[in-house]
Length: 175
Image 1 (cartoon, rainbow, N blue to C red):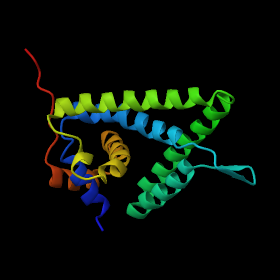
Image 2 (tube, rainbow, N blue to C red):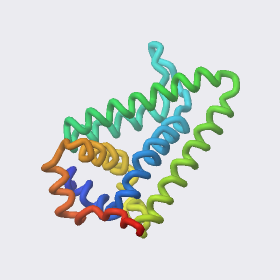
Image 3 (cartoon, rainbow, N blue to C red):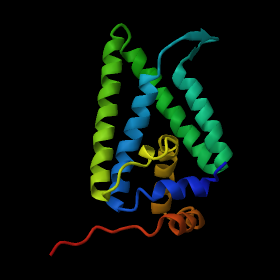
């Protein structure tokens, strides 16, 4: 099984243009939230806990992210939990008109992907998941890692990722 560094390095090969990374800071969270909302399909209630496909997927992803790296995994688990809470609260808000809830979720999903593809236009490369579906799972972790790098955290991990993927490409100044 690949390590965190290997996963992030492989994903980063498709994401060296900083404009692409910045679009991912918006697009990936929108897509993740939308997927959580789209999978918020109440199946069963146990002790006031609503069981949904989203809950089971979040639980599994959180365990995987924590297994890869505890600190980043806990951050991811917290962000996924916040996304789930947003789905739960929004679903209750749309009570009686659930179709609108799912239409909003699909719209968010669509907007997120448009933003993603704009970033990949700048990059000049296809998205990572086209070659490896693990990119769909690693993408959110990549965004959190890159955000941490921008804030000056996880420098040793950033150096290892750059060793695998190569340096960042800066936008050229137009004169």
